[in-house]
Length: 274
Image (tube, rainbow, N blue to C red):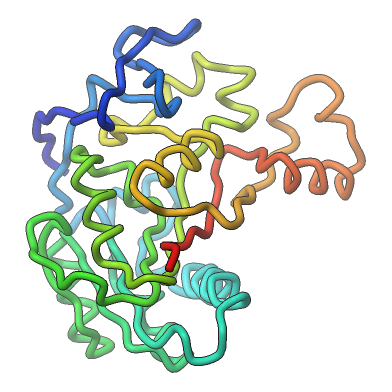
């Protein structure tokens, strides 16, 4: 991965303030509560990201992790579609579709999938192995047809994009009225950020330009004409907690985490109102 210096356009009218316990390179937007990483750098996702780089973090390559990635994809699609009216979702766009595992699952579910993927290796893999419609290049480098998608999915992708204003504007424009947006993101409403900010900083990816929590995500969605419907933790890490939460019975802890969307990662479903 090659780093590329970049800047972060803030949401309209948003001024910044420092955050207790964090270096000055992390600052919070007063309007939305979004945390901006002022020292972030874009990276170029070369072949090694899905091979050796992924393996360093997860102990296997992205391709070798196909079963678990597909399992998560099916769960996400089921959750995104469970409240939709029959026949209201016929197509899907995934931003950062990687090697196309979720797109392939969407096609199996009867949807017409399209992917956007910045990695030449991953986009080629999706096309060659599954025959998927994957557009290679940065999502914001392409002109997308307005109001053309019933469902947009972005899993651990949006935080990697520096141009947050144009990103949210483009997502809003791509969704048809009544269309759905499914997101998976890191969250600062979780045990690591809450109790161990030094560890959070030490492990913070250099190419994450922004960090949201459930409140800042809801406010940001509203800025761009989108409405948060549901939000929940994407992971449960009770042993990272301190105090009472660490010692709750696991079932009670999960109920609490679901109620508060408490976790180091989160998933959310939003809608573009009709």
